[in-house]
Image (cartoon, rainbow, N blue to C red; front, side, top):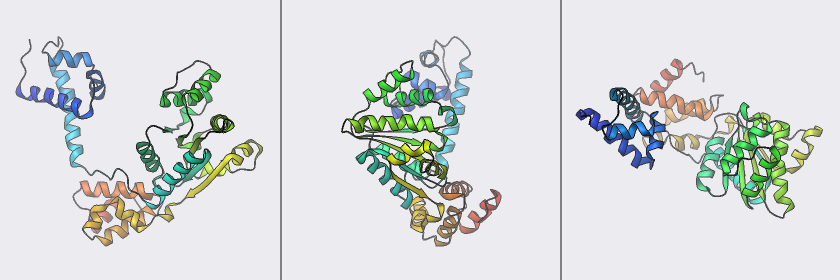
Length: 309
């Protein structure tokens, strides 16, 4: 049996603490660390046949990064800003009424945060799917939805479609973020889910979140979008120019608590540029980690980051 140093024993204790904190199995915590569960078990029991120091080096690197990240700025998980609350309400109404809804606009203004918050608040009847260019064909989209809702992964498109509708039930809502990547055919497939429930006298909400192109396409008078436009009950475009000063106070409570009005006003100016709220958060985070989030510190960091106000 291998004898470990005090430092190595401390790393093993950290692994056990991580398992308890996140309620993970041995294999799951191994996946998180980039080590097989079997290797972790052998290491813990002092029976790892290969060089154990290689594993301890991986553990050392992981926990060093995590300890440093705890010292860095941690943004508010969800701030009920004027825009995020409107997006949240749009999703809620889409779930209630069924059919299609679109909430879109400038990047970095809180749309995704609102969707994540809604799913967190309603885990049993709402699902969030983030679209990317790899999920634009029908098969990949259906497989992703099936995976998200726990439906059986059938081989053919029609079997996948049936598997999904049989897993879904009345009163649920599917939220698709980054919807500007969806093709007309993909949108039609999603519409068909909503129509299926509508024909049964039930509701299934399909809410699209994305950039301004999303609503422009879905509101088009072109023939291929006619059915989509007719079934879209809510359409709203949000702009970074709509961001309010109170939103900045909610996102950066430390500034409001310390009455740092000049800093709040400066971050509001940043947020109303194409940088939006995400840019303001990145700027403040870097200034905070640089231990100077005063007005002069924010301005200096903005110059360093090539952010123009």
